[in-house]
Length: 458
Image 1: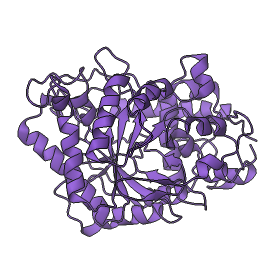
Image 2: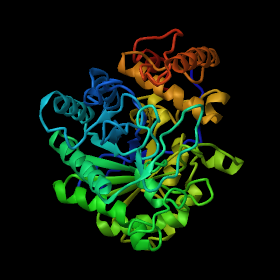
Image 3: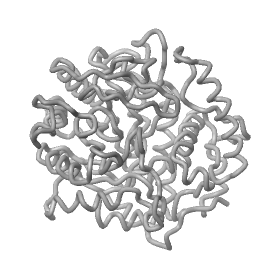
């Protein structure tokens, strides 16, 4: 029987309440959201960029599993959907560029992903992004960004040297986001989530660390600072139906000098409420420091990594008539703390726990468990290791296997060995871009669903 997080015998009933969105008028069936994670399941070609990013049968199978159950996730948000073939966030991301028409094989596969996600009443949301400077130099040596501030090498990965985006570049990006939204709507998705967090391009325009511009997209005034993100949102709203959900993921904080502060984030949220989007998902950190950790005992007990920063943001609304909905992601693991967070925000977003247990929402809302599986200490406290395992979980689910159990020390030990082999393969691959970004687990596996039948009482 798995060890689970447990903050007491708290009823999950508040998490089961529906949530109505203002702009679109759509109603989410419950307050548990499956957050976006790197999936790495779409097509990839190192030498033929237009062949990249087509969803595969594995993408369909993955979301089918998340969508199972009467109490499946209120929303299922996909991993990154890039808007350019040459600025992919990760190898095997899904991709929609302005050159992709709403027809043909790529479009048909997006339709299948949407249909699978919606099978039990979950909302299908596509997370759409532009990586800006956060792209490997081997994929794009000169990407566009707000300014020419290069991302330092991280874990041996070297990123492209960015150039400041021209007005034509900015217009192309705005067109890309709007086209992707329209494409997703036509393929059956219920909405779009812009990735404006974790150091991606929208965040690069918002952060003092990466935006050194002196034109109308600089930081000299609030209007200038918000111009890019509001133009993107306006363009999307002008292209989609009134009932198509429009949301955004934003950082509540960045952990560098000059990075985004909670006060900065509050300013953005208030502006986006005026633009009229449906929701903002609040996260934190970026490639230089994800911030996905419990640094203090008080944070460990309440679980939510960014709750103190979100409290600052919520104070800025100062009204019971708030129209924009606010979702909280990062760190929540137990029903009691999730329910407690609803005193501040409107919904809870779970990432890695959903990769370990695709039917976690159903198990929580049905009262079968009081929290997510508690992983062994290295996985619980080492962000990079936890994220790497989650990516392997996703591949395992897509191939009809149970995700390896992070509460099993022997399984995690084997994963560590497999990760060492994978790292050697990546080093040997160099700039050929033929080795995927997912560790292949070689330990014992079971058919999907086997372990859940043995452990739903926590």
